[in-house]
Length: 195
Image (cartoon, rainbow, N blue to C red; front, side, top):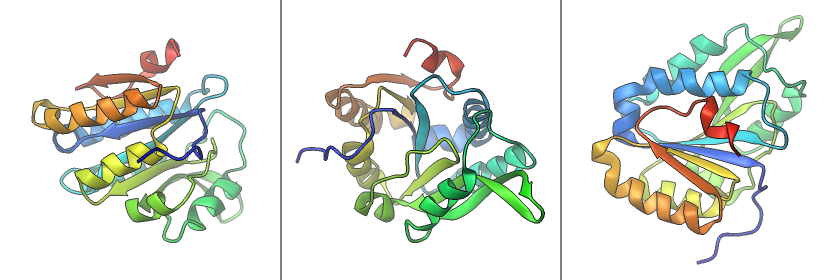
Protein backbone atom coordinates (compact mmCIF):
# COMPACT_ATOMS: atom_id res chain seq x y z
CA UNK A 1 0.00 0.00 0.00
CA UNK A 2 1.46 3.35 -1.02
CA UNK A 3 1.24 6.36 1.25
CA UNK A 4 -1.09 9.03 -0.16
CA UNK A 5 0.42 12.28 -1.43
CA UNK A 6 -1.68 14.44 0.90
CA UNK A 7 0.90 15.23 3.58
CA UNK A 8 2.76 18.50 3.38
CA UNK A 9 6.55 18.03 3.32
CA UNK A 10 6.88 20.80 5.92
CA UNK A 11 5.61 18.46 8.64
CA UNK A 12 8.20 17.17 11.12
CA UNK A 13 6.30 14.37 12.88
CA UNK A 14 7.30 13.05 16.30
CA UNK A 15 6.57 9.50 17.45
CA UNK A 16 6.92 8.69 21.15
CA UNK A 17 6.77 4.95 21.76
CA UNK A 18 5.09 3.37 24.83
CA UNK A 19 8.07 2.52 27.07
CA UNK A 20 9.67 5.89 26.41
CA UNK A 21 6.40 7.68 27.17
CA UNK A 22 5.82 5.66 30.32
CA UNK A 23 9.33 6.43 31.58
CA UNK A 24 9.52 10.12 30.62
CA UNK A 25 6.12 11.63 29.79
CA UNK A 26 6.88 14.92 31.55
CA UNK A 27 10.25 15.25 29.78
CA UNK A 28 8.57 14.57 26.44
CA UNK A 29 5.94 17.25 27.09
CA UNK A 30 8.62 19.75 28.14
CA UNK A 31 10.64 19.08 24.96
CA UNK A 32 7.63 19.37 22.63
CA UNK A 33 6.45 22.58 24.31
CA UNK A 34 9.98 24.05 24.02
CA UNK A 35 9.97 23.25 20.29
CA UNK A 36 6.51 24.74 19.80
CA UNK A 37 7.26 27.92 21.77
CA UNK A 38 10.54 28.61 19.97
CA UNK A 39 10.59 30.36 16.59
CA UNK A 40 10.14 27.52 14.09
CA UNK A 41 12.75 26.84 11.41
CA UNK A 42 11.61 28.40 8.11
CA UNK A 43 9.09 26.26 6.26
CA UNK A 44 8.74 23.62 8.99
CA UNK A 45 5.77 22.65 11.14
CA UNK A 46 6.59 20.74 14.34
CA UNK A 47 4.38 17.66 14.62
CA UNK A 48 2.02 16.02 14.60
CA UNK A 49 2.90 14.15 17.78
CA UNK A 50 1.89 10.47 17.56
CA UNK A 51 1.43 8.55 20.83
CA UNK A 52 -0.03 5.12 21.62
CA UNK A 53 -2.78 5.83 24.16
CA UNK A 54 -1.83 4.01 27.36
CA UNK A 55 0.55 4.35 30.30
CA UNK A 56 2.04 7.80 30.46
CA UNK A 57 -0.72 9.47 28.43
CA UNK A 58 -2.42 11.05 31.47
CA UNK A 59 0.92 12.48 32.63
CA UNK A 60 1.61 13.77 29.12
CA UNK A 61 -1.75 15.55 28.88
CA UNK A 62 -1.37 17.08 32.35
CA UNK A 63 2.16 18.24 31.55
CA UNK A 64 0.99 19.88 28.32
CA UNK A 65 -1.82 21.66 30.16
CA UNK A 66 0.53 22.93 32.88
CA UNK A 67 3.35 23.99 30.56
CA UNK A 68 1.13 25.74 28.00
CA UNK A 69 -1.04 27.65 30.48
CA UNK A 70 -0.66 31.36 29.83
CA UNK A 71 1.93 30.95 27.05
CA UNK A 72 2.05 32.04 23.40
CA UNK A 73 3.78 30.46 20.45
CA UNK A 74 6.65 32.48 18.98
CA UNK A 75 5.17 32.53 15.48
CA UNK A 76 2.36 34.97 14.79
CA UNK A 77 -0.46 32.60 13.97
CA UNK A 78 -4.19 32.41 13.74
CA UNK A 79 -4.70 29.97 16.58
CA UNK A 80 -8.47 30.27 16.31
CA UNK A 81 -8.45 28.84 12.76
CA UNK A 82 -6.02 26.09 13.81
CA UNK A 83 -8.33 25.23 16.69
CA UNK A 84 -11.34 25.17 14.42
CA UNK A 85 -9.51 22.95 11.91
CA UNK A 86 -8.78 20.37 14.59
CA UNK A 87 -12.25 20.54 16.09
CA UNK A 88 -13.65 20.04 12.59
CA UNK A 89 -11.76 16.72 12.56
CA UNK A 90 -14.64 15.19 14.54
CA UNK A 91 -13.55 14.85 18.11
CA UNK A 92 -10.62 17.20 18.49
CA UNK A 93 -10.27 18.41 22.07
CA UNK A 94 -8.10 21.05 23.68
CA UNK A 95 -5.32 19.61 25.85
CA UNK A 96 -3.42 22.86 26.57
CA UNK A 97 -4.46 26.50 26.37
CA UNK A 98 -2.27 29.57 26.19
CA UNK A 99 -2.75 33.21 27.03
CA UNK A 100 -6.09 34.83 26.22
CA UNK A 101 -6.36 36.34 22.74
CA UNK A 102 -9.49 38.25 23.68
CA UNK A 103 -11.60 38.62 26.81
CA UNK A 104 -12.68 35.19 27.94
CA UNK A 105 -10.98 33.36 25.04
CA UNK A 106 -7.76 31.43 25.62
CA UNK A 107 -5.66 30.31 22.66
CA UNK A 108 -5.62 26.52 22.19
CA UNK A 109 -1.98 25.49 21.88
CA UNK A 110 -2.30 21.68 21.97
CA UNK A 111 -5.19 19.79 20.44
CA UNK A 112 -5.75 16.03 20.61
CA UNK A 113 -7.50 13.92 18.02
CA UNK A 114 -8.01 10.17 17.84
CA UNK A 115 -6.01 7.94 15.52
CA UNK A 116 -9.11 6.78 13.62
CA UNK A 117 -9.90 10.41 12.80
CA UNK A 118 -6.33 11.01 11.63
CA UNK A 119 -6.45 7.94 9.38
CA UNK A 120 -9.57 9.25 7.66
CA UNK A 121 -8.53 12.91 7.35
CA UNK A 122 -5.84 15.24 6.18
CA UNK A 123 -4.20 16.85 9.18
CA UNK A 124 -4.19 20.65 9.53
CA UNK A 125 -0.77 22.12 8.72
CA UNK A 126 -0.71 25.08 11.05
CA UNK A 127 1.76 26.61 13.44
CA UNK A 128 -1.28 27.75 15.39
CA UNK A 129 -1.54 24.68 17.57
CA UNK A 130 0.34 21.51 18.36
CA UNK A 131 -1.48 18.38 17.27
CA UNK A 132 -1.46 15.25 19.44
CA UNK A 133 -2.71 12.08 17.73
CA UNK A 134 -3.72 9.30 20.14
CA UNK A 135 -3.18 5.91 18.47
CA UNK A 136 -5.12 2.90 19.76
CA UNK A 137 -2.20 0.51 19.26
CA UNK A 138 1.08 -0.11 17.43
CA UNK A 139 -0.68 -1.16 14.23
CA UNK A 140 -2.54 2.14 14.13
CA UNK A 141 0.69 4.07 14.72
CA UNK A 142 2.33 2.25 11.80
CA UNK A 143 -0.69 2.98 9.58
CA UNK A 144 -0.54 6.65 10.56
CA UNK A 145 3.20 6.73 9.85
CA UNK A 146 2.45 5.40 6.39
CA UNK A 147 -0.26 8.03 5.80
CA UNK A 148 1.22 11.07 7.56
CA UNK A 149 4.91 10.26 8.03
CA UNK A 150 6.31 12.13 5.06
CA UNK A 151 8.25 14.98 6.53
CA UNK A 152 11.60 16.61 6.03
CA UNK A 153 12.52 15.29 9.46
CA UNK A 154 10.95 12.66 11.71
CA UNK A 155 11.77 11.92 15.35
CA UNK A 156 11.23 8.59 17.10
CA UNK A 157 11.68 8.49 20.88
CA UNK A 158 12.09 4.90 22.09
CA UNK A 159 13.38 2.95 25.07
CA UNK A 160 14.93 -0.52 24.89
CA UNK A 161 11.54 -2.26 25.19
CA UNK A 162 10.31 -0.28 22.19
CA UNK A 163 13.00 -1.53 19.80
CA UNK A 164 10.88 -3.92 17.65
CA UNK A 165 8.31 -1.17 16.98
CA UNK A 166 11.06 1.46 16.61
CA UNK A 167 12.75 -0.59 13.86
CA UNK A 168 9.49 -1.03 11.91
CA UNK A 169 8.60 2.61 12.31
CA UNK A 170 12.07 3.79 11.31
CA UNK A 171 11.98 1.66 8.16
CA UNK A 172 8.57 3.05 7.15
CA UNK A 173 9.62 6.65 7.78
CA UNK A 174 12.92 6.23 5.93
CA UNK A 175 11.06 4.91 2.86
CA UNK A 176 9.03 8.13 2.86
CA UNK A 177 12.25 10.05 2.23
CA UNK A 178 12.68 12.16 5.36
CA UNK A 179 15.60 12.20 7.76
CA UNK A 180 14.76 9.92 10.70
CA UNK A 181 16.27 10.54 14.12
CA UNK A 182 15.76 7.85 16.78
CA UNK A 183 16.84 8.32 20.39
CA UNK A 184 15.81 7.57 23.95
CA UNK A 185 15.76 11.29 24.82
CA UNK A 186 12.91 13.63 23.97
CA UNK A 187 13.36 15.72 20.78
CA UNK A 188 15.37 18.89 21.29
CA UNK A 189 16.28 21.91 19.19
CA UNK A 190 19.39 20.20 17.78
CA UNK A 191 17.11 17.70 16.01
CA UNK A 192 15.81 20.41 13.67
CA UNK A 193 18.87 22.65 13.54
CA UNK A 194 20.47 20.76 10.63
CA UNK A 195 17.28 20.23 8.62
